[in-house]
Image (cartoon, rainbow, N blue to C red; front, side, top):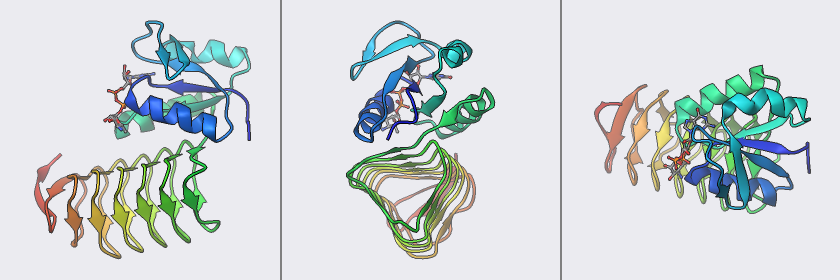
Length: 210
Ligand code: JB2
């Protein structure tokens, strides 16, 4: 499955995982752009410059991009910027992930190995469903949210835009986690979490604002 070569934005830890994922899902990685343009390899893909190269890449026929940056707000901004510049955001979905045929996926999404997306779940643009995370039926993962490794979301859970669920969180059915909320690793969410709240613990309690 190749929509043409893909330029990856970001050369950090997340990019390592994403580049391997793109290759495993049949994409050719053209190269990497980073805020630090110093030439170097990221799991075998070359850093070729910074984001100012986007226009010249399009002229070379590179029209697909992937934003491989963990920061949710920055990933969303760069994704929209790349789309405005005429790039198609591809998805990076591990062949070792299980995605229901009734799930609805946006663009620019990473779904890592071992993740499970169950029936009639929506995953919006630029979200990350990290390794081994489970999103049960009727979930709603909004734009640029990140569900970290090993999270377990029961049915009908909403994760707001740019929200972050730390590694190993669990969430009981029907809960809503607001936009930009941050849930600490290992927390168990049994009440709704307001937008912009920081919550942690078992059961999760709001301890502040992000
Ligand atoms: O505007 C930008 C920009 N700003 C920062 N454009 C481009 N093209 N690149 C940018 N960067 C680059 O993103 C930084 O120079 C740096 O190389 C990279 C971020 O790397 P870092 O290793 O700090 O974070 P990450 O986003 O790759 O990974 C985080 O998120 C993942 C989901 C880490 O927390 C990981 O552990 C986590 N798995």
